[in-house]
Image 1 (tube, rainbow, N blue to C red):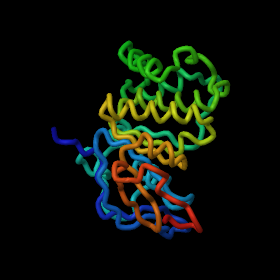
Image 2: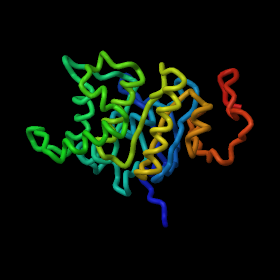
Image 3: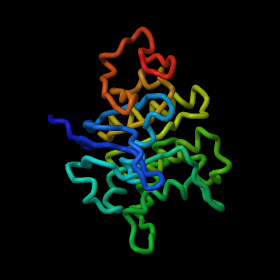
Image 4: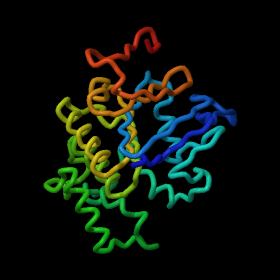
Length: 248
């Protein structure tokens, strides 16, 4: 069976604008991300991991080149169409007055509701399934500020699951978690790529977990990004050494 390509980046330069000037972070990027890819994005701080993820989810526009989502040009997608293709967990925490775990997960179904965002029985079924899948049934009515870091991250992932997108993007979701919670988080993401044929991109500094669970690595360094199969990486040690501000 032919593997479906979800994301194609062609001759793209990624970055942002500062004082009306382009700041180029990643240059001449050519990448393909497919169904069942669990991709760990690794690199030093400031090399462009977050820039890549924010560009793919629409928070930043590419400075040059083309990005295709499910073979459709990124620039031709409406906000609603993009919300049905890509879900995202960023480092910033969401909050709100009396917002519960259930409320946050339910936000994932907003692209599938009416003009007045009224939830139907079908919407509730998807939301409850996402809560069950992420092990949040006993915590769904807790306020977000009452959740531990691990449960909060699970809630954000459950929101992505409820959003029913083929692509999930996560920016350092394991930061500030204890080691057991980190493993549980990566196991959960691995399950989605296998069971639901999703494409998951996750940036992380936990190189041991990335090597253990991900199928591919995206090494971001020196304004470039190189995709490497984990199968070809050395198994006896973490093969990326951060030394003197460079990858070796």
